[in-house]
Amino acid sequence: MRNSSSHKNPLAEVFGFLVADMSEVARRHRRLKLCPFNNKVPNCTKDKANDPLGVCSIYHNNHTVITCPVRFREHWIIAEDAASFFFGADVNWTSLMEVKLEDKNGQSAGNIDIVLVAYDEAGKVTDFGSLEVQGVYISGNIRRSFETFMKNPSAWKNVDWKNKVSSSFYPKPDYLSSSRKRLVPQMLYKGGILKAWGRKQAVALQKSFFETLPNLPQVKKDEAEIAWFLYDLQLANSRYELKQVEIVYTEYWPALNVITTPEPGDMSDFISVLQNKLTDKLDNPPDTPTITDVFLQ
Image (cartoon, rainbow, N blue to C red; front, top):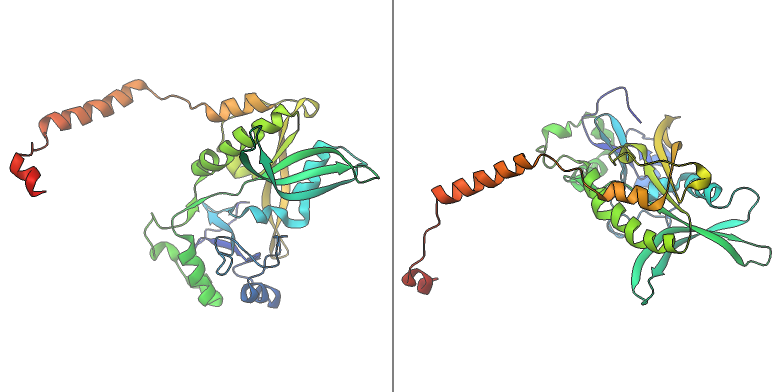
């Protein structure tokens, strides 16, 4: 979501509530470190269970960016959306969390975030699909601003955090790391097994994250192997609410090939880099150590 005004500090939501929210319920969530978004336990467990980093979203360029994958579990909209893609209507289904996936040799391929399971009246599994949820990694130091806020939430609105830390420490989304280090490896390894089994896959992302990916070749819903469910945060009644804003349907390999294939730049630019390094090395050769130098080391 884009906001009409700029922000002097990076925090949007802490323990589920706007940083400007001084209501009793917001203060209670901060005091008890509670998560209102269906975490596996009542408390927030992000980063450290005993000292959680309760930041759900941050502001970047006046846009609210979801940084915690649990934030996507609000009202379980993502599970309902994924189930509609996997099973259609009038099917009994439920969700299973953090399901271990193994390859043919019994080696772990990692855990699937959420598996949606369809079942019959006898409780027998009749179908399933995987749902991966991806927040955005943060570069800079988010914990320092979080701890400053928690010490005195009411004073935070007057804090100009951009003037307190250097630009390299100011928290901002790292979309490239989020896709290369997290999303792509999951889709290739875990997703490759599910593709071989003929299972459909769903991915829940914020739209701003998806827009940093290359343009994916789209297909019709009934031809899709992956549904990319795109969400955003919309302000309503002094709270941000998760809303689905778009669905992109793709096949598996055409989408992954586009994501994992870089667009090459001009080779002459790389040759210029090589030339500069070579020239610098020839003009400034390293000192050749003598036997005495080596002995003294």
